[in-house]
Structures are given as structure tokens and as C-alpha cells.
Length: 236
Image 1 (cartoon, rainbow, N blue to C red):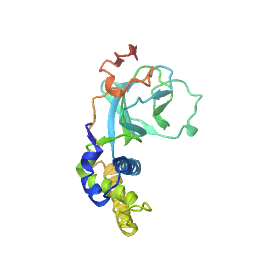
Image 2: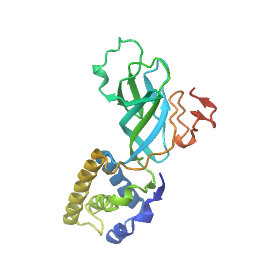
Image 3: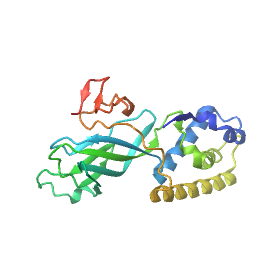
Image 4: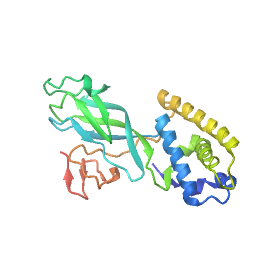
């Protein structure tokens, strides 16, 4: 995932909203990107990791630019020739009295955590699809959002900026037009992501360290041996 500075893609918006401070332009664009990703679940990444015996809940790690707000799916490697998906189900439906075994169910747990059921009876490799949105307050966004949806983010930013009261660029009628464009794009992107036509960013080579978890380390610091060398932490 490559990041692009928001100001580098704001020329059309800034021409319409002349005299608008850069900080406000950036905030409007990033907020639009956050809403777009949250509604459509379009921006995704794939990480890998492994379970820990008798452990139900795992941290999904962190990223400097994006925050995790959901899981699109999980595959578990039960054996070398047996990899299959887990089923998403709310934990209130789980029978917590069952013995440890091969996990069959999962649930996303805010913020950026994962719960498995039943608790693992061994170490199993996992491939986890994450659903992402830009963090609030960042100055850049993932460039994959701009390939098909740059117009949508511009519309979302304009819908907010043009309805601001008491500024030279206020245009409430046009704000409604841009808001309709933005909402339509969110709907289209959601269908696209759901059907798998555009799953967001390409799968990454990041490795998820399931246990222990260090909040100071971004996912990019992890190695293929399930280690964070910077912290000296090892999951297995």
C-alpha cells in the first residue's frame, strides 16, 4: 500500500473552494475517505499469522495510516492440504463450555481484535482479510482509493466544504449535488467490494503477530518468522 499526500490531489477542490485553508481541505478529504471506506468496506489488506494454544482473543496489530474496523474473512490451515474458511458468528451464540479444538467460528472485536471459537488446541496458520479506513488526522491516503474513486472522494469533500456557512465559497445547492454523487459512489463501491470485483488494495506480505502484542510496532515491522525484531518479541 502506497500513500499519497492529500494536498497533491486537491487541486480541483481547492479551485472551487478558493481561500479555503489547507488544513480544512485536508480534513474534508480525509473525512470523506473515512466515510467512503466505512460505508463501502472497499479498502482491504491481507495479513497472516498463527493461533496460540488455549487463547481466544488476538490483537490484529496497527498501521501508521489506516485503522482496522472489520474482517472480510479468515482462512485456517488445519493441515498441509486442508485450508478452509472460518464462519463469522456473534460470540453470544458460542458455547464456551466446549473443549479446545480447531477453531470454526470468528468474530471481529473492536478495536482491531479477533476472537476465535473454540479456543485452539494447537498452532494453526491463519490468513486474515482486514477492512480498513484512513485514520483521522492523517495527511495522506492509500493511493489505491484514487484509481476508481478519486471523483467520489472529491465529491465527498465538496459536499462538506460547500455547505460551510459564512465562507466565500458557500454553495448549498451544489453541496447537495456533490453529496448525491458521493452517496451513489459509496453504494457502488460497496457492491463492488461485496462481489469481489475490486477488493481494495492488493494483498500485502505483512505478517500478523498474534501473541504477544506491542502497540508501538506497525505491521510493517513484522517478519516472515512471526517476529518483531525491533522489540525482540516472538509469537512462536
